[in-house]
Length: 360
Image 1: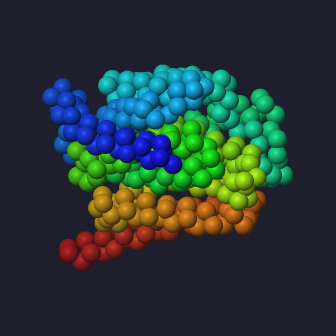
Image 2: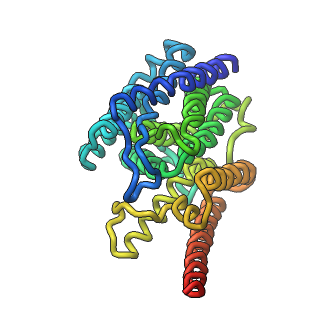
């Protein structure tokens, strides 16, 4: 526990103290994100906060993670560095989508093929247990790519992506610790500290954004920790078996729920409207809440609050019910939430039109 707390404290202090220096440097170098058009913010704000998140995370791991663990996970850390460099390059000089995807695929193949971070069992979901190796590799690559990029897409309101990350990684940090997986526990605690240090400067009105440098790293680590959670849950020793979940996949999906649900919902809406699923627009959940009149702080607090509540509920239900029950429940909840928000926006537009007609 002491090492985990040291890792958290070290990354938090490094992130908090280094962020103002990075902000000052980015302003001096005119490396700023221009607001306007489809972007919500106004003015010029630096967008490479992920640099400090990454450096604080790495510094903490080098300080507190045993050397043997670092060397045994060399492939994992190599892939993390590659993802960081991809995000950094994209923030510095935007990459073409295919170049960005190729770099991600290389990193993911390193993790899945060499570090063996992959989903090899559905633990009874849909009656499936062990998965053939080649299917496991393809499916794991798909999951990591999807989660990584889905997380990248939710970084649209001050403090939102960082707040979602803090909730999700805090759950994994605590669970890995109580199940004696200290390697991942130290990694998760270090990550939470680094993100919290950044969040102070990213809260509205943000002095800095995380950019792809940060969102790709967080999405990549979220996907990896999610797979590690599913795999570890099925192999818990008897002395910590009381912390296992009957619905590990549902619990894992819950931790990645907001980016996955929001991205899938937006893709479906775009296709229904005859647009490319990758076309930029303002149909994300945070856009809906902004249209309903909520400011940045309230949007972030509402979404994070709902997310934390769902995690808590699923934490309790996953100890009792299995994936075959809880995954359909999650799907129905997401569908209902999407309809509710869409109805709220439409009702708001109708109300505005009526008021405008009366004013005439």
